[in-house]
Structure formats: structure tokens, C-alpha cells
Image (cartoon, rainbow, N blue to C red; front, top):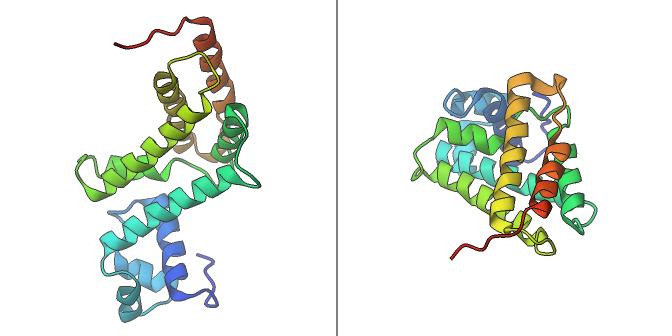
Length: 190
């Protein structure tokens, strides 16, 4: 897995879990396999994570943090176009073959499940972020943000289907949505 013993045990566990959960799924990845691949004893594993569920939630938090860090580097995007360029670049990286949140939602479709709730939190945060960036435009912000999220998630789903061999035209699709929204009068909901 490429994990080094010099990394602290908690980080090693998370790194290995992230790779296995993303590649093989949560249900298919047991704690014994994570312990073995990260080179930690059972006691060490449970000192850092009280259960596999706690590890999965930490994985989702780490995935969210990585997404927002990538989006904000070197500084937060100044406008919607810059944000979409960064999201497009991220979605088309060679190591990206899907959205970790969509993968978890597919494995845990119960909306009340703690994992699925964490997915909803991430998607709601992205919707709010996109909605904020849409403020300067004359459009129904939440409707347009939802359309943009559909493009982002659709692009990541295509990466899951085709792998890294196929770049997805996320930016071009998002720009087409923005153009169509600009040419359509805004209708306010009562």
C-alpha cells in the first residue's frame, strides 16, 4: 500500500482505510485487513478508532477535508468559474475514479444511516458553496447550484464507470448550464 512506518499509527490506519474503502468499498474491507496493511496491532487500532464505524466517519471527514483543501489551494476561488475549473481539474486527476461520498451513499442507501447523513452534509455544503458563488448572477441560485452539483456528481460517476482513462468534460457542461440560466428569466418561487 505504500504506507511508511514513520507515519503515526492513526494516520497510517486512515491512509490504508482511505485506499481500501475507495477502491474496494467499506463493507468489503474488514478491520483485520486494515490493521495488517497499516502494520498496527489490534490494541493500537482500537486505541485510535473505537469501531469500524468510527473509522468510516473519520474517512469521510478526511475525504471532505481533502476536497475543501484542494478547492482552496493556494487561496479560495474568487468566483464560480475559478471554483469550477478547480473541481474539473480535481475530477480529472489520474487517481480519481469516482466520488468517495457517492460510493458510500450507494453502499449505505438508508438516509438515516450515520454514513449517509455525513454524505448529505458534504453535498449540502457543496450546494451552499456553489449557491454563494452564484450570488452575482441573475438566476435561481439553489436550482442552478443543484444542476451544477448534478454535473459534478455525474462527471465523478463517469470516472467510476470508465476509470482514469476517460477525461470528463465537467467544466464545459457546467458552463453550458450557466449560459442557459443566464438566457432564461429568473422565476421566483412563491
